[in-house]
Image 1: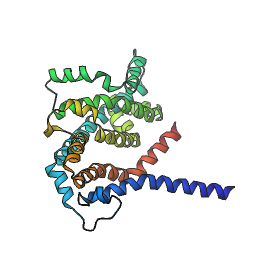
Image 2: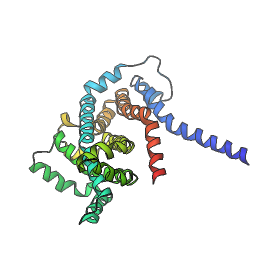
Image 3: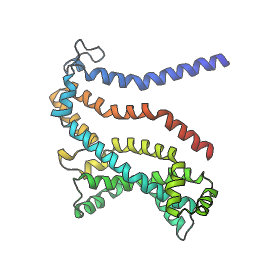
Image 4: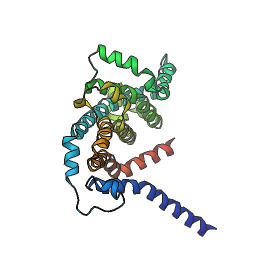
Length: 275
């Protein structure tokens, strides 16, 4: 029975690997095929790699500008989100004040509130602030909607840090601010890594808010540009450029996971053990 269980587990792992890696490999192979080969022989290997698909996807179709816009929006959002979220999580975790439960409940309620329910008033608000079709307006919205998740995750990491460290740092002459920046924040670096990676991937793939708040093609982020490219390339039958654009979209996410996989797993395991 034990041997049978191992064989069954190995078979399940193999099927999971094939089901995950197979479509990715097929997209990569299709991205270097001439466009006419993809519908004619979708499972065959390219006789001659069509590397020009990537140049066309990057330049002619506008995926390049969308890549830059998504990169700027994601990095700028994380640069604002992580410090603000860490400070809010630290205060809610280590300090008790009047209205504490209300503030904490507001953050947690933000995780359960579908953002599409407020997309119309949000659009009108940004329009009055001259923030529609601007990256800074989109970044502010991204920060607001990513903040509840950030506070929730980092709050758990701050809860695992002993309160005695705060008392010891205060006795050594640290202020509340220096205690946070010099003592507490370095101890939750694994949590910052977890939030940064998961929030960054979510921002990179975000479509709905960008579709509504960005109106000009020059300001489109990568998911919006890819959706438009999917519609146009179907009529032009340039499937090679479409699959090349898909590879451009997937590559940063796969690279980030490959580089930080061990760190994320260690951080999640440490958080579970501390909890």
